[in-house]
Length: 402
Image 1: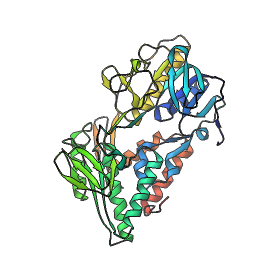
Image 2 (image 1 turned 90 degrees about the horizontal axis):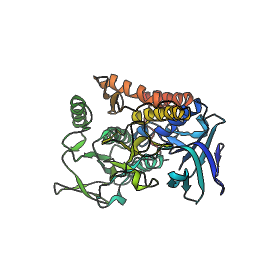
Image 3 (image 1 turned 90 degrees about the vertical axis):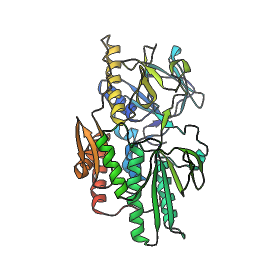
Image 4 (image 1 turned 60 degrees about the horizontal axis):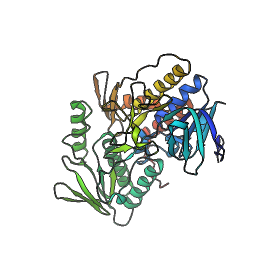
């Protein structure tokens, strides 16, 4: 165990505020609560926070794994912070208890569920053949697989990316540049990057001008774009589609959707899709001391945008509401509001919309980088990523298998 980690004993431990899940929502909630003087216990499956929006850069050699992973004890320098590396498998709201996979228990005064989401394959057969981009291990495996195939004897590689949302779009541009960089060292390499998307347009939540820009840039880069094409089955060497086509591929990466990871919460507090139902103060519906935030919730009839900015805002709001509840004050309402939508389209090129103003090209890329840099927790961590980005802009990508 690293410094700052602890094991949960067989005897129940009591937490003033217990947070399950260490993603954006959980980290921002913990940071705000600690500033307000609360004792915070964070429980996570790993001992580090992953800056998931930048995993595609790790998978393609622009960033290193250490640039997007930050140990909790490293940036929560607070005597009121406790970290447990455990998996929570059940909750008992009536007794204010949660149960770990080891059969141990934690009790709490306030609970925040911030468990995020897991990949949704929508019942498509052959999911065991795909790679994903949810964890640092996923990113490193994708990189190793690409480098191994691209520099192998055949020197021929096709990568299928399924899903034309922000993650899929950013990934295919980075993959094209990554393979182009490998080709400079291995000129005999032949490669194709393909994006397969069931919808009629890319990134439907973005302004139409951004969708069009991404489409045109994709075509300009020679990326094989297949719209209105759903994947119906995945095999070890390609995918079957709703158009009756078989699209061969050495690697298939799935970025087509997620579903809430909420099995630990009783079904009575979830909707038919597994989302935890919360009210306008982010309290779990029907509960007084339990809150939920991030990709695992639904507020009213609206599934909230699964964005880092959404989770971070919710983390701050729920911390304020716990403070208010503890001091018998009125709770504040969380109002879903997306300040902007940003998209990276490879080195030196991006697009986005902030406060109704659309940016494209190099300025869009700079705004995208600054926005993400601001969300990285900890000043030192921001500096590390900033300097890595600066070096990578003027140097070649990291092509080592790690």
